[in-house]
Length: 74
Image 1 (cartoon, rainbow, N blue to C red):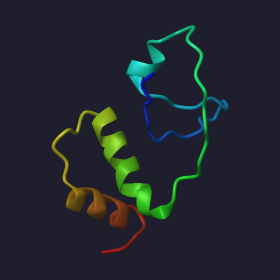
Image 2 (cartoon, one colour):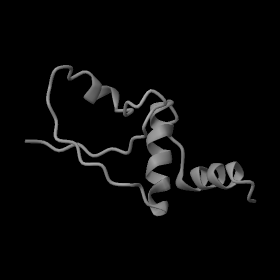
Image 3 (cartoon, rainbow, N blue to C red):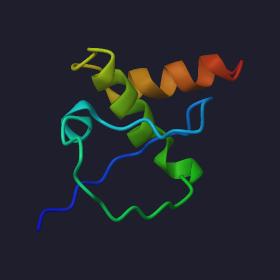
Image 4 (tube, rainbow, N blue to C red):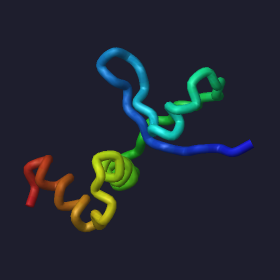
């Protein structure tokens, strides 16, 4: 058995967003454990979104800058 860990969010229609490779497994049954993301995990969450959007070479410093700018911080 192989476990896959990813950070997700609940979409407006109530479904969870999941990685494309998991979504391809239509009809499969999974055990799902939901844990709230801690503030320290925002970098991992941002990294996953960046990868999803095609930004593969983004650095942690760039992610930090994006997060700070989105919160109005310099």
